[in-house]
Length: 376
Image (cartoon, rainbow, N blue to C red; front, side):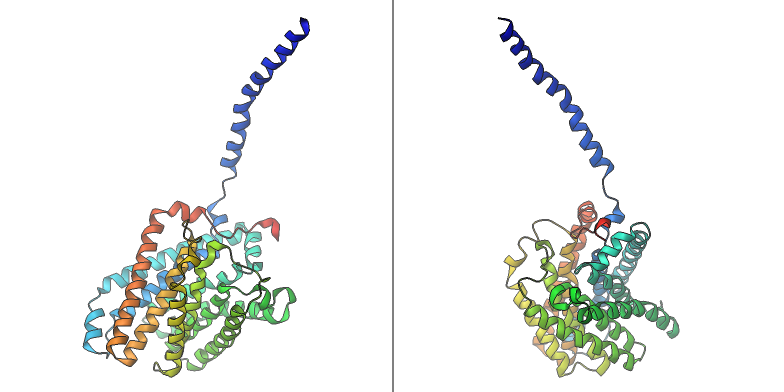
């Protein structure tokens, strides 16, 4: 009879010990999770600057629509009554957010340099290094007239912004055709078009100073690589690097590139000629193709993230191109098309702005691409 009692004691003691240790085991991971919560500097990578591109592009759109032009009365009456204070508010908001993100990213470069280095070596992350300079160039073009009283102040700022773009061009484009592991056929993805957009935005800003030769140089650089990138993306192999499903909104950058190219060439040539119209029609076709495939973005819109902002600025560039097209053609159809595209752009922008404000914690603590310092 002694043996069963001993067995009974073992059975009783075992659960009690387990029950006593369980709270201790649970408390340790919770403490570790609290201590290991990532800093905002870890989460804020260069892809967050797509928010600034959308804000800056929207400021340029409102400035364009609010400006008086020699277009028909119907178009003029439709957009000239837009309050100029709205443009000023959007521009000031764009500057404030861009300054804040620039400061945060500068601190990230100082305290988490290895993560920035890993971002630079990533086939998607490297393309977003163009985003802050694109944002500043767009703000430069849309700046209110009282900001730059002196022509030379505009030139100095333009040079400060375009030098990093050209430096990144030399690095990225050079790798595409000289480095075996970085061939464009291996790393091409829709975000590769950001480097091209940077050249077109720089060309568009250069013409405002009357520098047609400089603008033509940047436009040529962008156009040559746009053709290469677009062809590569159309025929990319199944074994090449794919985007995460949550990053699929960046497919709308197919719309942004030809739209920005049309605007850049218009500024160089002085009119929205046949070449600009061809680029605009291409952009319109690509927008229709993507809009007719909503299931492509089903997974990416299930959970809110910064990638949603990739819907905004391509629509803004398309609206800007449609406005320039309507000013040139001066037909009722072109005016209606510009009105519809501008309205869609503004509505998408407002939705993202309000939703991002509500979901600010999710936005800042839910990065899509994670760059580890150990990966360098």
